[in-house]
Image (cartoon, rainbow, N blue to C red; front, top):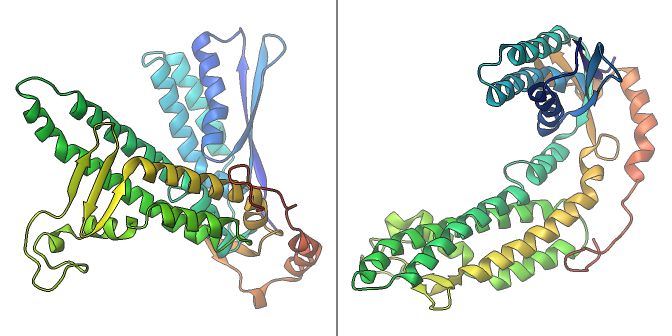
Amino acid sequence: MLGVGWRTVLLQLDDEPTPALVALLDQIVEVAAFHGVDGLLVEPDEYPGVWEFTLDENSSFLNRVTPIIADQISQVARDIAPTDEALAAVADEVRRQLEEQLVDHGGLDSIRVAERGQQFHVRSTGDASPGFQMLEVNLHHARLEQGVRQYLEATGPTAWRARHRLEPQIRVDALALAGSARRLRRTAGHLAGEMPGRHLTEALRRFDHAVPHLVSLRDMSEHIDEYAVGAGKHDRPGAEAGPVFDLRVDPRGPVTISARGGSMEMRSAVLACTSLAACVQASVDHYLLYRTVPGFADFEFTRDMGGVQQVIAREKEAPQHFQLRQAMAAMALAKPDPKPCPHCGLPM
């Protein structure tokens, strides 16, 4: 038997809810969605009436996220009105009803996408995803640009002190940006191997051409303890100890970081990152269904063994597993319709 499920919370109200309670109820759906669960909130037509909140997801997944969602809802209630006991009571009631519906899955089988699809999902939507890497890039770039503005706007007899103080900050932010750009490139490379065609191959080629020294600069930053004494991988024999990176701030704003014959202008690097991330995200959106949904993608059956999901070996699958595989076999033949990338125009 396979485990699927949903959870329902019913809240009886005698009168129309206060603005604070409406805010809390609205956030229940938002909290559920944030944690990957579809939520539906239905308001009664009149009062007394019942607000109905439904969570719709795989039952095993709901078991795992229920405590997280309940804790978050309680925190939302405190954030809205720290001393409102009635609001806290509603959050407690939501928790009580959700916990009452936790399901014992001992001996119950579930279906999930196989390891390759799991990795694709994590790399495309988690904290290793292009979206998250671009968040890092943009945060570092914003700090970098702020420091550069202060550097260029420094005036007066002590401006040299201000610039001297800002130079280390600018260098730190530039190298942090380089590290994020390198992680974006690695993630893009992994994802490109999971999607066919030359679209991402070309996107990676353009990126590498725009920032040819990214890898070496990032490596020198990571191993600066070795380069500082002339013992880095790219150092010539007998290289002297001393400063590793050179920073140049153009009067028009662009910052260039260089070391050991390699350099990178940071605004150009950000543009290259933005372009690569846009192409990767377009391909991920195009192929996500076919890489992460069981049937379209390879899948496996698992059994709950004391709260731990154990994969059922293919040779040990039961007749009902085989029947489901047969019923879903046609899904594996489906392919997404070809379409051009909205960023670069190449077919995905």
